Image (cartoon, rainbow, N blue to C red; front, side, top):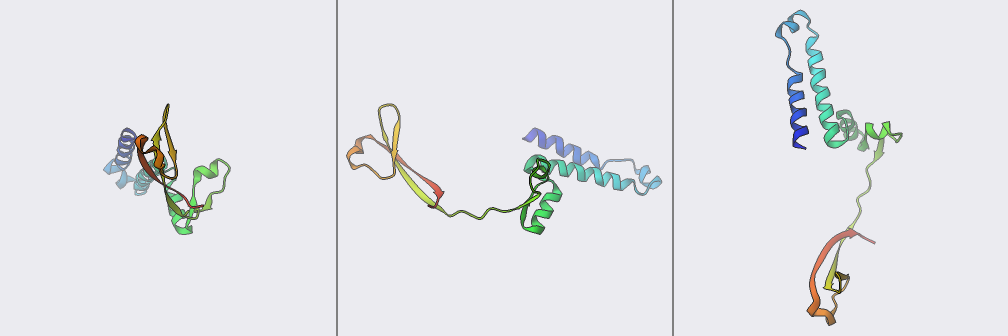
Length: 126
């Protein structure tokens, strides 16, 4: 991850470099440099989030999940964000068994000597 970040950061930083004379001779030359820098940022965003900068902007504007990658694989460009799911805490109680641990939803009073511990997980509400 850090190696790809370093490479992309260097490409983006160097994309804006150019000759000072080129701007004087061709005033539109700086537009190419800006385009190269934006392309570098676009690639950085695509590698790290799976979305281009345009996808992020259109997603915020439409309040949907937009993705060029999904579109290129034959899916829709924008889809609604999934509705949040209510979560509840579920505790399991684990006890030593012959080969491993056995876990139950309620503590067993008869197996206090074999008690290993409990674990609480957040699971979707029924």
